[in-house]
Amino acid sequence: MQNDNSLLRFQKLDVYIAAKEIARLVNEARITHAELRDQAQRASVSCFLQLAEGLPNDGPGMRRKYFTESNNSLHELVAAVDLACTLGALSPQRAQAIQQLSLRTKRMLRALLNHWAGRSR
Image (cartoon, rainbow, N blue to C red; front, top):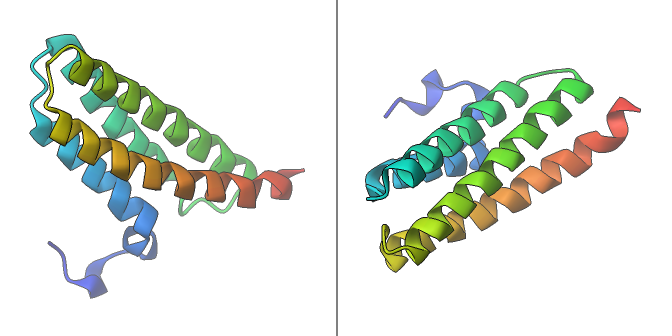
C-alpha cells in the first residue's frame, strides 16, 4: 500500500476505503454463478469508481450525480450478492461480510448525498 503522504486527500476518507474494501471482498468471494459474479464485480467497481469521481469534484450537481450513481451501484451489488447467497453460489459468511460493509458505505453515501442535495439548488 502507498505511504499516507503519497495519497490524495479523498483516498484517505472512510467512504473511499470502505468502497475499495467492498470491491476486494466481492472479487475474493469467487461467486460460483457466472452471471451474478460478473454483475457483483462490475457493480462493486462502479460503486467505487463513481464515488472516486465525485469526491474531488467541486460542482455540487456533479457530486450529487456521482454519489447517486455510486449508491445505485452499491444496491445492485448487494442484490447480486444476496441472490448469489440464496442460490448457494456464495457462502453466507462472505455474503454477510459484504452486506455489513455495504450498509456502512450506504450510510456514508446517503450522508454525502444529503450534504450536497441543497447546494445545487
